[in-house]
Amino acid sequence: TWVAMVAQDTQEANPRVKDDIRHAGAIAPAVGFLRSSEEDRVQNAVVALSILTADCVGNARAAHKAGALPLLIKQLDAATAPLRVAAGAVLRNITVDCPEYRKEFVKLGGMNGMVRLLSMQAHPALTLTDVQLDAVFNIQDIIEDTSGRAIAEYAQAALRAGAAEPLRQLVNSDDDEVSDAAERLLAVLVPQQRGGKR
Image 1 (cartoon, rainbow, N blue to C red):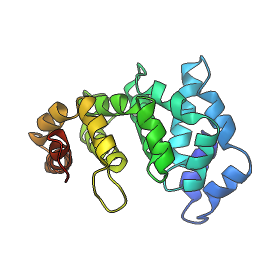
Image 2 (tube, rainbow, N blue to C red; image 1 turned 45 degrees about the horizontal axis):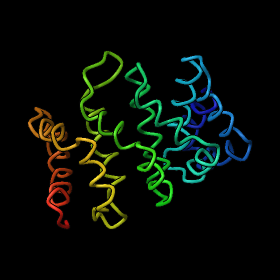
Image 3 (cartoon, helix red, strand yellow; image 1 turned 120 degrees about the horizontal axis):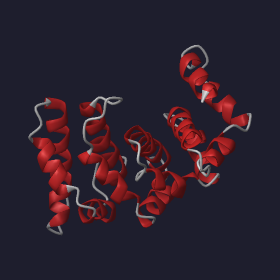
Image 4 (cartoon, one colour; image 1 turned 180 degrees about the vertical axis):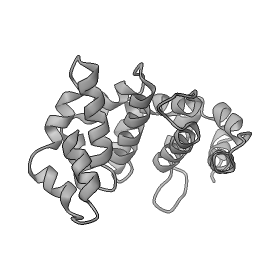
């Protein structure tokens, strides 16, 4: 994890630091830790990957190549709330820039766990409104193409996973950002529920 933290702290001074870490061969071992039976190792790996794959397509693709996708989807059901949230962030980072990875994510059932993040309860290590916003945005990034139009197959997967009800609840949030984001995502999903197009 310290390598990822260094990358986060030094990226402004060295924008290529995440690429340098990939070229040094650090991504595959981080993914390997996801297979560990030790929760601390898994949590450190997920946190590291959330940093290293953020805004870095090369690292996201390297993580996928190392087999991260099914291992991260499994962590969406982890007992620890911060681990579930971090896994959702990495999955978004891996899938958002590659249609093939996105399709694989949905085929493996990843949308179910991602939708469950919409119903996260308060946790002392997390800011609930940030978690709710990230959950909404992650789903939106996965179900929309680069022009912001809904991809019917993925929008319908989100609906089958039960996204509509928690989103309706989030529309009633006291936090305006959360409410607005949930309302926008619902506006994308509802036409798909009716079999129409956005």
